[in-house]
Amino acid sequence: MKLSLALATYNEEKNIRDCIESYRGLAEEVIVVDGTSTDKTVEIAKSLGAKVIVTSNPSMFHINKQKAIDACSGDWILQLDADERVTPELAAEIKKVISMDGKTLEEYENNLSDKKLFFRHELVTGGRTEAVKEQSREPRRLNEFNAFFIPRLNYFLGKYLRHGGVYPDGVIRLFKRGKAHLPCKDVHELMRVDGKTGWLQNPLKHIDSPTFSRYLERNSRYIDHLAKDLLCNTQHVIRNIKNNKFKMLHVTCYMLYVGINWICCKPLSWFFMTTFRHKGILDGWQGIVFSFFSALRFPRAYWRAMRRF
Image (cartoon, rainbow, N blue to C red; front, side):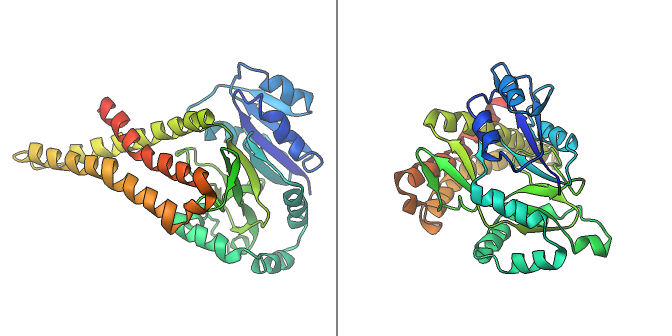
């Protein structure tokens, strides 16, 4: 089975080399779609044997990820971000899984040691439902494993986080060519899969936030998307308030509700849920800091949305 690697990049000269080196010997083809980087990303990728396609850099980064996927010719595709690393254990598992027949693969999935944890993650996030929204209607295809979630270990200020709801952070990254795609509508969306989705056991290492400045930079981009969604939803609700006589009162009450919810309720509930219920405190000070700033994204998104209102 030929395996292709798909990458979308923009100014990733600090990450691209380690990313490509981590799967050396695993993929026969490397496709990089670069959003016109201003650093040495393209030069480094080409020096490592990657086929590089230079294009624009859309704010919805999944557009370039899908372009990289579409350019692949392998039977299977592994889609990665530049700050992710394939461990030797994960590489061996990928080779094994894509060579299995249907019956063997079914047995393998049934015997995953962390099966309960993985499926609980899907239940909480809605991952399984989201992934299969566009399944084929052909019964035969519905019984085939055409894609796999890979658990991720997220690196935050010197430590891989395992609590606070951060792990397994399952992402669909391994799939048969033509059997999965990104809708390109939301920054946190999952792949849409034609067929069944399984899990791999070994985690993908995600060097997400080695420094606090990098965390704040990435977090700010996510907050912008959150603010945009909040603004659109707020404007939609206000446009659909039909009672003209009391419209201002309804608008005022709704805006007060949104403000209280996003400034107080959401951040407090998120912090206590991730720190204590999901045991983020067991990750030490990194876990507490991560929960705190994750909770702060709600009031920050609210203020950004209101400035644009």
